[in-house]
Image 1: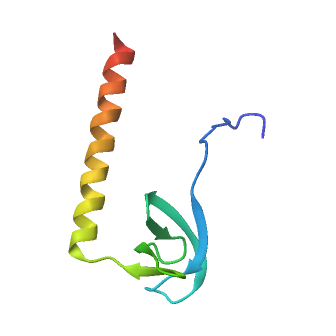
Image 2: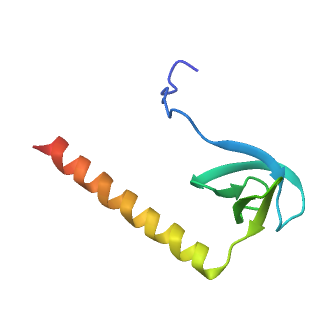
Length: 86
């Protein structure tokens, strides 16, 4: 255990809910705000709140939103990395 590197990753948004893909009670990990990935089957879901919380399968618009968010995050990381090198 002495040779293991310790990494701090900060806060990870997780919730307990029923995955609409595998229909199992599971831990869901946030990808971006209101979008989660099932820890059992790996599918992505969208959180829907209307008096109660439900997790829904993603439609094409949801997938496009997540892809755009990932691209924005990658660009921000590239900018940060560029500033560190200077």
